[in-house]
Image 1 (cartoon, rainbow, N blue to C red):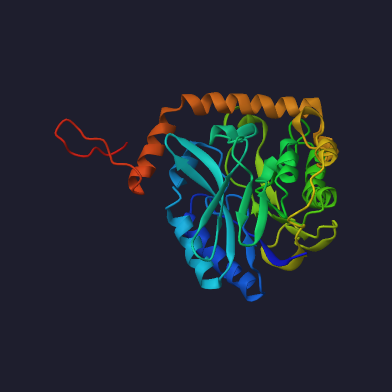
Image 2: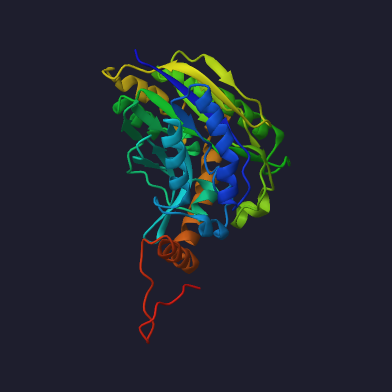
Length: 348
């Protein structure tokens, strides 16, 4: 088997401060490179911060924007593959997009397959997109946060013969209250962060890298969810897990940091097995590899209801379309429309 030295970064991000967050990540990236990492994974939305309201759209980018330019520079400098999540704009829509930048500047992309619960207010899911990247390192599958908790990802990993699985997360919990966020749910969420990569690794025989944000989670949630849940903190617990399910290294809940270790990739000519997919697919759309406390009909209904409300708000939003066009104009992807005098109009 081929071995690969991988790294996970556990970072704190500030909402909307894209350049600040990139500069904040730079020394962590270079620390990982100094420890011999050939692939470095950043948490989900470590660039924009984790905001679930319309203001999120103003921090979106094209794949020619500042985040990809920054990652290209660092990838070239360190001769390393860098993986990070950003809010991508294309046409009139926004996507939660993971990019893997090769040392030569090549950009591979995986979009989040679904926008669950309150996330549906901010971007579209892309369930038909592949979740696998073929690069010089091998075949890498990517599950962006909630995608790892749904059962369709199992088929993506097994059918594609993935050799390494990446889990960029932005997993947080709300403030404890007995109605919408009881202590039992918080405890289950903590267990989920620790057990999920181990269960994936043991089930598929593939090494897993999980990178999560840490620190306070600030910013109101949209719609009904915002009246029910007050945000609190991210759960950290980033980890690197071997293909046999051994936790090689991990971080706690609160500290920022870098973990680096060497993993053995799954064989590229591995024979897929339908039974592995079936056993990973639980009830109500959730994966049987996740925390059992979440695999209930009532939980699935709550998530589905929030997602339905979010999609309706997203689809009807005129502001969303305006921001999409404005950002693409600013980043050179579109030309501004002409006014009656033939001059370029500015977007509101």
